[in-house]
Length: 369
Image (cartoon, rainbow, N blue to C red):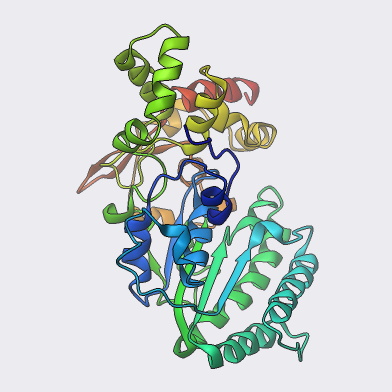
């Protein structure tokens, strides 16, 4: 059996290390075939970084890595200059640290392409990099976890505000660079607001709740049973359960995440850890920051009855900055609540995705009250 890719976020490492890759390149192909700038938000540990990495190697033209995938014989393999930035690598202590480390990150990309930095102005440095690279071909920009420096200060609104302004200036540069760009793809946890970081980037296509891409990240039932068949059989024997019994219990514990109210997926992190450890546990939830959530619950006086069974409209998700959002919106964006149904008039019905999240969250509610 191929190895379980726990913690593997680099597509090349995954392929060359003989890890399981659940083929999502049909979605990659559909997006990359367009020149439209895209944005998608998903909860933590849902495959955002692996998706960004897959785009990176696609646009670098590394065809051999994609052998056996949907996209292999459909893509015109050509190398483009790529700017890839993960905001998880940025020092988010304060706004000054964010700016300094962004400047350093850009400097390193200059060096990778043999270019010389000519300014300390972050906007000009970013623009110059794209302009110089465009002489070699249209440029691809990939930004992962765009909101990480803000989320690090979710309980400190003044710092979050200053960090947001730095990022707003940085990201706003992208629209003016459009003539030089081949493709832009941005991920995050929180869904951007119309008046926030991307206020001037109004050509960005937000596919967060698009039905067409609702299963782009996370594992579908069919993918679970196809790619993990060997592990399913192994765990079934070890736990002395029939295959159907095991699958039903896995579904009850880890399925139920929906980004359109119609299609449901498993959290990859929970599934990979379950097959690795071969026991039911709260893997995704406990990999987060429960201590922070307790403080959030206390400050907002959150009660379970107040946050489940509520309906939200799609525009509610882009009305608030995440640190100012009401609990229902905050928990949807961070993945603790999900869409269980969609009603044309009422919007999306909110509930816990599965047993893992519900049981763990209930314990936190008790600690925070």
